[in-house]
Amino acid sequence: TVKFTKKNVKIKKGKKVTLKVTLKNAKKATFSVDKKGKKVVKLSKKKAKSVVVKGKKKGKATITAKAGNKKATCKVKVK
Image 1 (tube, rainbow, N blue to C red):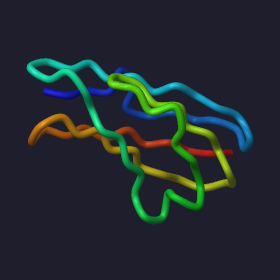
Image 2: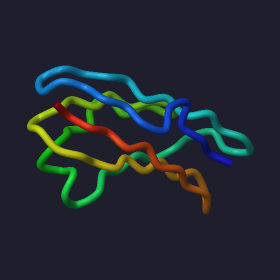
Image 3: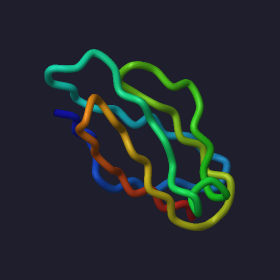
């Protein structure tokens, strides 16, 4: 299973936040952002269990973590 430690996150434009996942029966998660969210946030420093999200402009984005055939989402709001 894969699960984000936080389901909803708010950040300010230009600021960064690290999102972490807990994994069970998997060693690594892959992270992606929804199509609309690509204009709002940027993903960087992708690691096995975390990713850094930077706010580019105001709006909402959904970050998805996948491990095997399981996935989890976290909603990010940029102010």
